[in-house]
Length: 391
Ligand SMILES: [Zn+2]
Image (cartoon, rainbow, N blue to C red; front, side):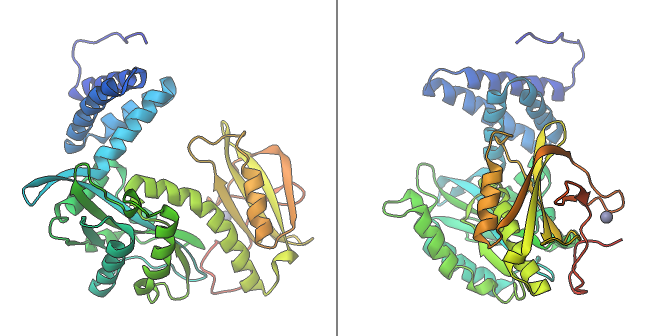
């Protein structure tokens, strides 16, 4: 890569951006594990410093540049930025421990509101007991945040996330709880389906297991089943009037990605259940129409739900493409399989490309009908339904 001309007066920020790009590119070219570790350590050190200085701009600017010029280096840098954001070194019993922020994603749907906010002592202590028993490795110490986070209540950006993970890491030694009343400022937006997160940090000495599946004889599948069966009893009262299921607890960014992926199928199933319930019909009376929506490239699929042979657009689900997916990924087959499992047999997939059209008034996406027009959702005439929005 050719070097850009250097100006004489450079801000510290610009130097750091160049340095991030240089080290990440070197890491991408590295030829052996020993060299990998050399560059990884250098990069982690610099990223930790930048997070400490709260220079979000430097991280984003390096990531932006690499995403256009060197996808492999972008990947390396993103990995290290995420790791440094969620991981802190803490001393427990005079020994160095690695504390990693974890998240438990909860997928929920409701015709009413999906809860968020403080959990309270009893729920925290029950969740803590089940996490220790079913999910985390023996002997780990962990802290929890006393708050059920909606996506817009999570800290925005790497630097704010690192600040929260540092607070949680600092409480691991005493198996502490972080009070988070201040997080309740942002009222969550009301959707039919949404995600909630439990957060905390787990700590273990370097080289020791954090999660139960790192120990012998435990598979992730069994651990998830045990957690789903026993772990969430204390949340039932909070989620009254909602359907809710938990994904497996993971380190923060991995949990986030996993919930993005899982919430697509969950939204489709929830919409089928919601329409059956609110219109008192069976799934086979519904038709689904799939459109591939393009911005500069394929960005998302939109699935319109209509009653067989009848006009109004009852509901719609957006199925966004995730990292690494494109028009060659067979999302349509996945979407169709989920709809068929839910009892919908009448599925139309329009072959041509659609625009990313949305409503000029409320900004909500428009959804495809049988004729290939993009339409606004018209809420089934149930006044209690909080969304979507009517004009
Ligand atoms: Zn609108």
